Length: 404
Ligand code: ADP
Ligand code: MG
Image 1 (tube, protein in one colour):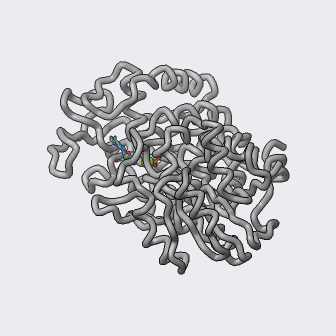
Image 2 (cartoon, rainbow, N blue to C red):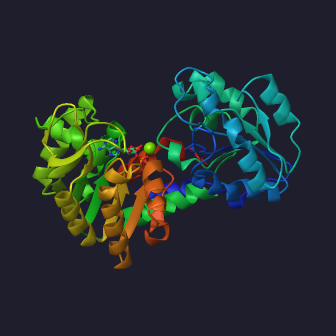
Image 3 (spheres, rainbow, N blue to C red):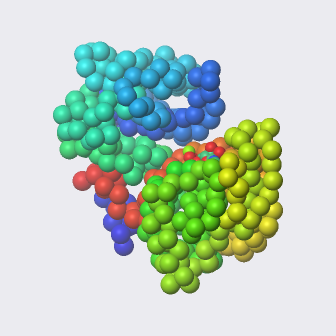
């Protein structure tokens, strides 16, 4: 019911004529850049192109707004969206112009002078603190730049920021872009009909974000497999020795609550039995395999061990619905990529046997691509935290405000 209502209330860009309109498009251009500031994975940009092109094809112009990374205080050159201009201009086949601040005179002037078919990219929204604070005056200034607002930033759909939420109070026409629609459709495939067993796999290092959503999902799942930094946090909460592994101690309470609830609800919660440890964050580190609650001081768990891999694979291969977000180990280093590779291989196998597999999270998507499994899973979402939040409660305010 809930899902149906949301879809029925949303307005889509395919039902709108952008002729002579300036479309303010909230995109998620939060792409990884390397040390030379080149894009290492352009998926998030590529997936938004159909929305931008639709506006241009109609005879409208596009003003693109996005965040990039987590700038600590104001302008940070390595997180400037200007680094995306060459790639974007090439993909859109037109020279994209740029304003060095997302508000102010330069942005206003360039937006005003924009002609049909032209594209303007504004500087990183998060260089302004007001973005994350959801400040009304800032949202109003952004809204004034365009005639119509499109949200195509699924990856930011769980955050009520100025550009995703408050802005919608100041602009009448608010539409869902193609990527946002596609993401919602795929998440709904999972929600509408959960074929059992339903297995959720979490890993990575954004621990708090994931645990809270998993807590809300507990009522729906059969197996919960925990790897990466999340597993270390659970081990530590249980009193295990984790050495200098990555953990989030302020999440111990949530972790214990998940453990208790899993027992109460009969969920098969699996923590890695063994882990691969290293004495430094490097491919040249000394390596060993130990029980996961017995990591020596000054060592850190960077992957799950061979026994845990087998356990994970066995459960995944028997699953009919699979949700995975967060790498199982520090997969960027070949020595600590085995757990992630074994997990992906099992997800692909289950998918081949008919399971629906949904994968989210920037680094998880990178891992899937890196190991060559992009076309062997059901859907790769551009959202990590957003995907989990949506699945936990589809009634996200940022999505609800599109249309009515
Ligand atoms: P996603 O982007 O898929 O949501 P996160 O951003 O939460 O995932 O985490 C990704 C990072 O987690 C990767 O860079 C990987 O190296 C790291 N990681 C996974 N397991 C561990 C671990 N045990 N210790 C340290 N880092 C880990
Ligand atoms: Mg990440």
